[in-house]
Length: 186
Ligand SMILES: [Zn+2]
Image (cartoon, rainbow, N blue to C red; front, side, top):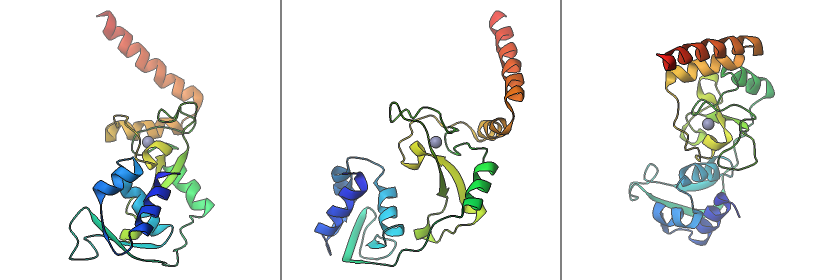
């Protein structure tokens, strides 16, 4: 059973009761429960309320008032838009810089997959607009990446590099190799 399934089950067993992040973290066995709660809201339509929705709840407290679900907002992004975002972001995770086919360090033997992420979640009013969409890798999408994220400048350059052809990438590689080999010799 995945983390989202465990959290869903826990909420459904405690309808109308205050549930705390401490309990959810213990049940799910992960610290990145916030994203899973958002998915239960956005993708499954569960009306999980937090202190943002109800004044009597403190931060870190949630309540599911009823097992009834809201109709789920269609959140499929068209293949054209998906391709456009992938192209714009140079097929590069905009948090850690990973690309498709890189090894998934959190999942030995598996390769990185890329996802389209809403920067501002749909549950918080985010929309399927280009400025609200970005590429995330499967690790960052699950909040599991523990890679030191590159600086914004480096990420910009990695993004550009991935769009180049192999021979141009090799030129950059040779340039950097020369630069750092000369430094080592000095
Ligand atoms: Zn990533």
